[in-house]
Image: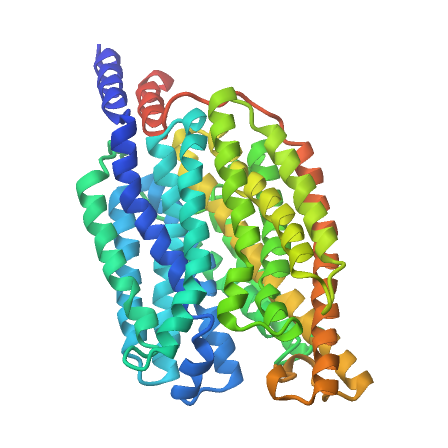
Length: 526
């Protein structure tokens, strides 16, 4: 009798959990404003940082840490946010991450020294980590996998607009005397507050209560410490110390010990932050590996394009932002069209394979660029890359979400986000060191600059004599092409991994409905 009652209650919850398309769009409004402000915060400071660091009397190493601090906090916190989403109110967690973001933004805007600014960026990163993990988790809770593609275009549009608008807005703010660089941080606050209000009014998720909720704080601490140590090593190696050095051995060894202890803890606790059993799922294991490879190749290969536009091709920061439109446009169109087709047909693997092929081809084409490459040809190459990334990145998450129990949706989603972000951090750091070394070597050979390894000063090409400027432009053009050449086999490896993912029919029930059904089955298991 008790089983009947509980099943009936779950059925009611399931019915209540199904949201109309209008309700989904209303709820998405708050989520999309939240992810917009998160991406904007990461990109808006890119053109403003030289002014900020100069105003606060910071050094080149401080410049690096202002960028890295947020990325470290975001990457390390994603698994914890994902696990919390499996245990407590997802709506509350999204609002908490936005609150952290507001606090970090205000602290950064009012900073009077670089130490305060770095601390503020850490707080911002914790909020951004929550948004990175939770937005996709909440979408999966509201929307069945079969219908998720329909809304992917909205997510892609927000991502594209924020990515392009950030550097442009940052440049305008810094160049406007009556605003100043502090508004690069303040401007995100009203958007975040708006998102909190919208979520309170529009996001209605059925909260299925779980008994005996436990949070593995020790595991979270060990994972965060181990990953942070590893990321700090990747960030500093090649600049502050050699890749093969005593410091490297100490940091890598320490990280290995911390992560080994984390694995031991995760294998024994009742509610691990990262359930190790999740990797026994073939789809999750393969999509995680593919996401890490996409992160290394995409972030590591493309983050230096802006520098290539400005130094090799001689464009301004604002123009460099506009020149990224072909790639963003390709990503937006492909993710939107693929999402609609996936919803219509229910098949998805063909888009992953096509994305892997086009991403590999895009990187291969971009490995041929130099300081004389035509803008139109470059734009065509970037469209190919953008289309490939758009077909691949979001649909890897969809494949994983479709193939795990609802109670593990948060963990699975955050694991993919975590490894993609980790891959991106490693890619940026390692390929950045490759670029610095290649540029320094070329300039030393040509006599156009000093060989300083990772400490080579980034030149202002406009202030150099024409003959020296040409050498510098060629050096940066060739070095950037080399980065894409390195990224090409990584993209090909991601394609190979995708080929082994088994296509399964997309579920037609939302995460909230599936969780209610799973909870209803628990009494039967006993």
